[in-house]
Length: 227
Image 1 (cartoon, rainbow, N blue to C red):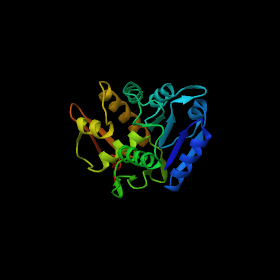
Image 2 (image 1 turned 30 degrees about the vertical axis):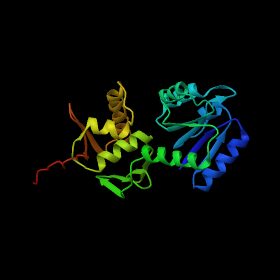
Image 3 (image 1 turned 180 degrees about the vertical axis):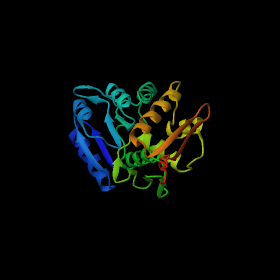
Image 4 (image 1 turned 180 degrees about the horizontal axis):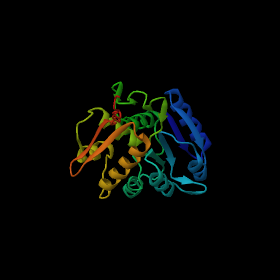
């Protein structure tokens, strides 16, 4: 599990990094907004709002626009207006400084738990193998890299192959706070998921109801005349 820590105070960063690594997380620390945008893909971002080269809320909106990574804001601004602004910028949670390490670790665990589907072993549909514990997707011998919400959607589909999963359920379980445009966002994520899975399986749209996953159709052998 990879965490990106964006914090310009090296003392705080060192304490947080040590605590999270003690819990088994791999933590990458960067002090600047520009470094965060250039950092490799991670599972969660711990983001300080006050950064030397930019506003953390603006960075949060940029990250949310380009990715569905889980985000927790770290800030000294604890009033209600600041909290609302942080959550509306796309953050999953908000921690006010000063905070205890125990609270931070509990909030990190909770956000990651909500963000990722519960593991129940390996599910197979045709040539597609989804490991819900390791959060890996393999088609044949090829590992497919999915974004967090793409994996969550796939996990819901492969849990019941052939069964139509209603749009409302998908939205409720994958987007914890759905907004007016979430229905369209679901369609976009499904289109990306189809593109990444290729011909390994069929992700079918049942218009007005939801989606289902089925094994890929196998080509029928061409019949030949026997002479």
